[in-house]
Length: 276
Image 1 (cartoon, helix red, strand yellow):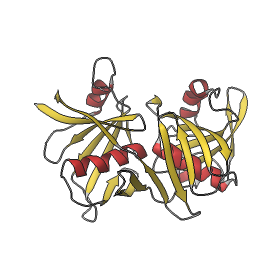
Image 2: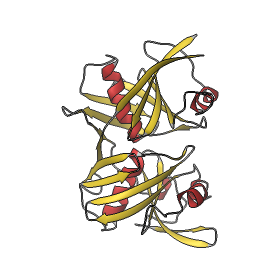
Image 3: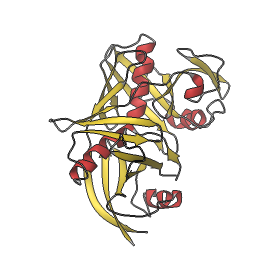
């Protein structure tokens, strides 16, 4: 069968989006891995599936597969593209959309200026909820990597993040340390590794090595986690502007127990079909 899809991106973090409401198919990890190949497939960082909800209190179910076929809990840039997709495809007429993910319920808002705001819910900071192996919750933790001790913050935004502050983002060893942090044994479900350069109280730069995808042009949950880590440690004040290689995200967080609000663009690239 032929399956319709849309290619989209949020700040260069790119996605293949499939409507499984008007189309019916069983997508497996092997399909995501084949389609994700940039030489022999469609090519993407993540595959996003739009499905009917299991929960009657929400509008859609949102599933996410990395290009390596692994299913993950959350994707912030993907969430903005998800919102744009379901409205453009007339799957809903709502401007505020409640969506269930593997990492919990999120709320998407399409703004009049074309930007999309996502209520990502409160960050999870207890080590067991990240998950991260530590005796107790702290603002930061020492992490031994290749004989050196790194100081990282551990934050879950529905998916796990390690945030490392660096002096200069352009020379940060993202491709050397990123995969070693991703597979560190203290992160039993692997982790996304964020390298953060704070420029001032409300402006920072960020590069992210994503679990199962490598370095991407942008990571929405990574920007949220970095903002939370920076605000908690007194480096920055909400709202913050986070510049990623693909562009800028605005992040708001009022503190403990409060939701993280992420705002940024979502762009349709092209439509296509693949044979299942």
